[in-house]
Length: 294
Image (cartoon, rainbow, N blue to C red; front, top):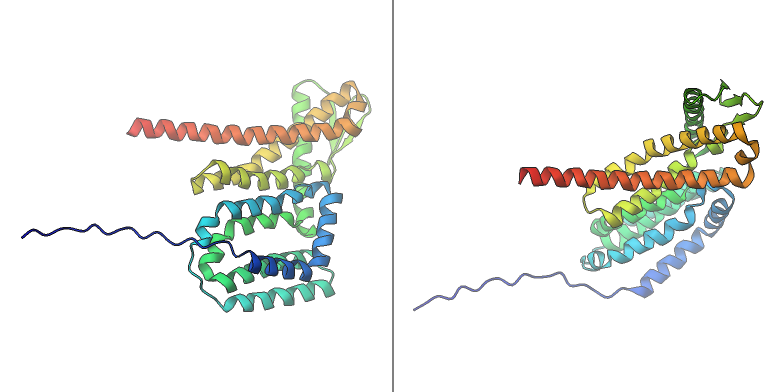
């Protein structure tokens, strides 16, 4: 008599169809409840050059959700009433923010309400699946003015100092007083808040998250790419200020108007190239190390 060993068949999670109707209802209620907040936010994206990337945030977050649809659709349905508590707290935050004209609290209440909805309809597993796209949504919200001012001034001073030393090294006479550079031809360059580099830092940080998600599977390396945006953005902005001072020495018109705007775009492009190059270098080093220890 022989025994037959039956191998267990792996059970794959059942992937449900997308519940478009509940999603549409929740989305409509969310937009209706936060319509004044969202309309003001759209205006900020249009008027504030620091927040021009805001128009890309929601499409990118939705695309990430779409790519991960098999994961969150395979999760078992599990209600969590703590989601209602979170929605109530977010609503209270919105009321307080509206009464006090505190835009940052009103805008973050939108993200908290969305988290509460996810927690209520799908529990912690569903909320966990949506953590990354929700983290992306944070970049559509301008940082509070008090934090913005604390960040821009040190960045202005750093860019001014780097430009002063670099121009001096290449033989261009320059005198710095605070964040103002005075050249030998009498041209004065003021490194204002818009030239602090905070603009490229915000947009580059957002794009580094999207770039890391789409091109890198290792979580630790995604974090490295994200944090590398800080030195890259600061250094490239200091280089832009230096380049502006250099061209102003020969032709002051090249540091104004459309030319100045183009310099900012080129600086942002260079920063993105540096980020991609850094990613490529790290991957090569990791590959070489693996080959050496194999």
